[in-house]
Image 1: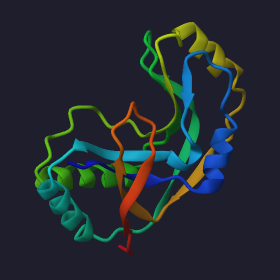
Image 2: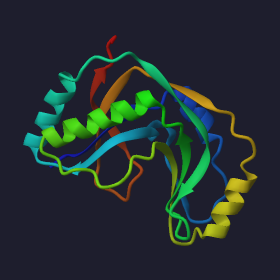
Image 3: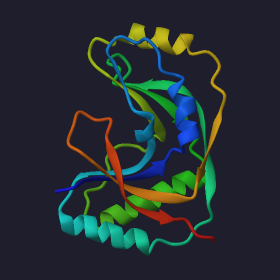
Amino acid sequence: MPRLFTGLEIPQQIGAALSLKRGALRGSRWIDPSDYHITLRFLGDVEVEVAEALHEGLVAARPRAPFSVTLDGLASFGGDRPRAILATVVPSPELLDLQAEQERLARQAGAEPERRKFTPHVTLARLRREAGPEDVAAYLGKGGLFTPLTVPVERVALFSARESKGGGPYVVEAAYPLGSD
C-alpha cells in the first residue's frame, strides 16, 4: 500500500534560505531541505486502485496558469503541545483553488474526505515532547525578520513517503505540469 500525498515542491534555493532558520531548539528534528514541500492533499496509505485513479485524475485535471505562492513567516503547530515549526504560506485564491481541486480528485479516486482545514505551510522541524511552548516561543522570538520568499508553482507532484515518524524521505512519483488557462 503506497503512502501518498499531493503537493508543491520547494526549489533548492528557497530550501537553502529556509534551512538558515534552523536553530537550537530542544526536542527538534529538523527536516532535510530536499524534503520541504507544501502539502495539498494527504492521502496516507491507499490501495493501488486509489493511487491509479488519483494519477488518472491528476493527468486529466483542468489546465491552469502557473502562479506563485509567498512564504511570509515562521510559526508552530500545536499550541500548548507544539508539534512542528513551519514556514507560513499566504493562502492565495490560486492556491486555494488548486487545493480544492486536489480534494475533489482525491475523493473521486476513492479517498476519504479530508477532515482537517487546509492550512498551507512548509514543515521545517518536527518537535518531540521535550520542546515545550516556552522553548518554541523563545525560538520564534529570536528568529528575527522573515524576508518573504516567492515560490513558483509550475506543477503538482504526487509524493510517496516511507513509513516513518514523518519528515521524509519523500519521493516524487509523478509530476503534473500546470498548463495555460
